[in-house]
Length: 257
Length: 315
Image 1: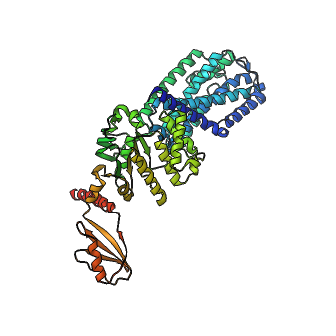
Image 2: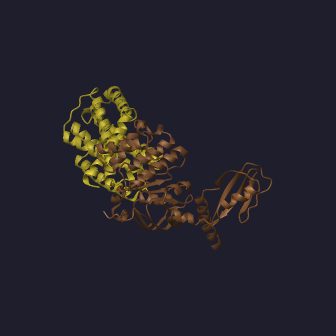
Image 3: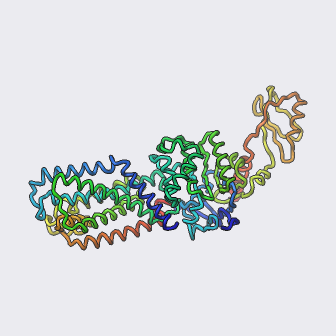
């Protein structure tokens, strides 16, 4: 395929992915907005004032970046895993596989679809947060870079899950038993400095901690960790997952018999 | 472009699935440009595996496949451009609209949006689906779904169209209209390979027929040559009067099968004309005459069962 043809194939796939989640916005955009709005009401308005300050900020100011990141992570992952596995399950992934579209375009199309949904939900949640608190952005570049890289990483992770999945149980196990614990224990709701030293060290093994803290650093200028680690970790993990997904697509894992 | 290159050349193709099943045991096949080619075989013979390998959904174990000279090991994307596949099972998104399915497929082949829309309209019109363009595909009837898959396979205008049992579960009227459509695109230059269980379909449409059984090609010849191998045909004759005994015809085997019907076996070289005179002499009036079974079907069964017997005898 020429570069132009590849571009057309990429745009076709990406637009299809975006149209998919916008067409079913009641399932893809509305629920996370309602869930996060409830978090804002409960943790920010009702419980938050009793908690006092966290890292020098009101609890609502502290928790907003974490909740935005939580929604970006779950929606980036969820979009790719459900779309790709859905195509596998229905058989229409074959439309792509029989075409000359190269594997990296397939990867890019699905990942960009996931990133678009992750960022769209993130943006909606950010707008909602403005009803509850004033947002300040200390380091805009860091904020944008971290949210995009995180969304790319979890879109890739969603693709890995979808490739391996053989039934609908397989696409709910990872989000339930891996993704949710990692995000909830990744500093979304608290500063790890509150934890005993041992658990602080254990928390440092959680990659989500670095992403949430780097993102919070972009907003508030405070972080439990050195944000350079976050960028290094994000870059490395994206690199590893990119090559892993390419390997899976090349070998046709669960796609070609 | 060298027009002498085969549309499809398969050499020594083998496929062993992970569970150890040897689906293909060294298939050699050549389909020339412009051919209307039938690939026949019983269930599990390896037809769909061959199609899967050509379309990249199945990974071959060994052997070589080239589409219009493009080796799939060296440049599969280029080979894929020349191939359109209509699978056996419906494999489109049931929630997508008919028009979108076809346009999206064109996009995966790198066709600009405007051209893709024009082509989608062209093929949806030709397959009588244009008035369904805005419908979600799950709302279509079975026949329409099959036509949608044909439109989708043609939208990038491949030189080789492969159809895996295209008329399975399709009513007779639609089957005939699909045959006309396939004949038309074949006459316009598209090479067609189809697998089918309807042997009448292969006999009616295809100039060449290959028979595959247990992962091997057991016949690969013209339809005419294949039919010439028939050494006998069985006809069913219906009579106006009820028959108490089976009519006796010199040189022809006969068998009573119902009160108004009997079978007559016509060997190669014999003529049907010589059947009617003795019947008239016996006061029997023929009301209708038909083949007992599809002629090709008889040959097909004899070829496949002959192989089975050989294998069993060799054990």
